[in-house]
Image (cartoon, rainbow, N blue to C red; front, side, top):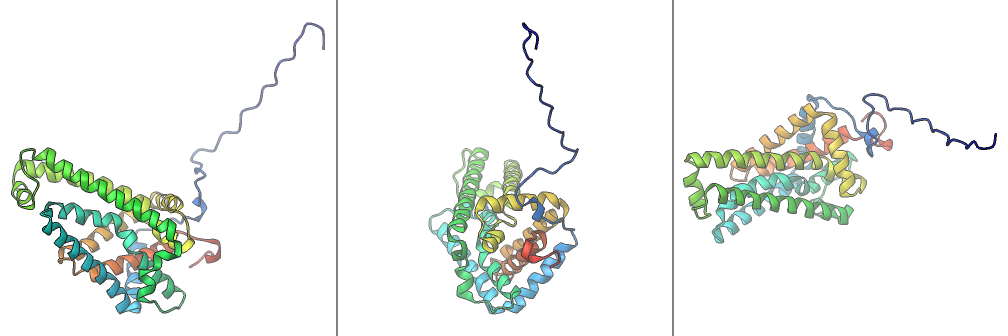
Length: 281
């Protein structure tokens, strides 16, 4: 090299651009199947088959939560906090995936040709104790935040009204009451949508694969966004069936909760594929 000349740094060539529409490298992305809306009714049919096959075990599991629902209602009445009954019922939908862990275990045992057991279903969380309890704490915190926000919306909407069940019923017939219902419904929908996106298949995967809550949430979100129409219909079915159970003074949950729980397991098995499952299930 001639004197007085300095070598210029070598210019690195830019990395090749990703092709348009390339999928982001999310974990487990290759395990998620796209499903059609018509498959939702197949999940319900398989869920009902599991209800019939499990018999009293599924119904007894659902009855446990009917008793818990009445216990919560009586407790709210005892402490003169019945105004929280409506947001607590809405909050039930937020934590329902956690409550259904035992139903996932029943369906998994039936899938393997094994006889389900009631105690085994109640203790299903012990399969992945730490992570399922962590998910439970997250869902309970989520529900508590929703209940407090609902109380805050009531306080802002009716600043000169004491928080009581009688006052709530009285105010619902006013213009302010309609605004309160509209705002509460919109905020509740946002909470429910977030809970569904992150939790639709998180608990079944945590039971099946002993995964942590973050892996379950990632898989659930990818599954929802990969099949938005089917997942929107599935969410609507969950609301309708569970709503039927709630408006029958909780007694309908004896059937509604097991049906949705077992169907959710089959939805998970349809949407998420693992190596040992093969191409077809």
